[in-house]
Image (tube, rainbow, N blue to C red; front, side, top):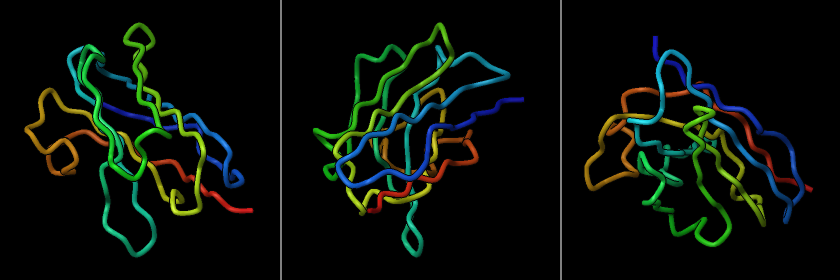
Length: 125
């Protein structure tokens, strides 16, 4: 059974940092692209970042460019999202998602078939 498990969320002050992890079980991530999404209360789920199977191609939402960095360690079967200079508007449940291929719209949630359960990130003083 394909499973993704996110971890690393928590409460952090504005300007702080967190690193989220997305670990796979039941399959190897080598052949899967990964997207990070987030959903704040009362808002739609939005794409945050994307990484290709090799890690050579990455995309970011405009709202996180320059602050977030996506990376992957296929040997550890894990993808990471390093989040720096966090803002209160980054508060949301963060999800990772995987699929063998996504189209041009990496930020569309319906492009991905396997999802994690989410991890809460709260940015507040």
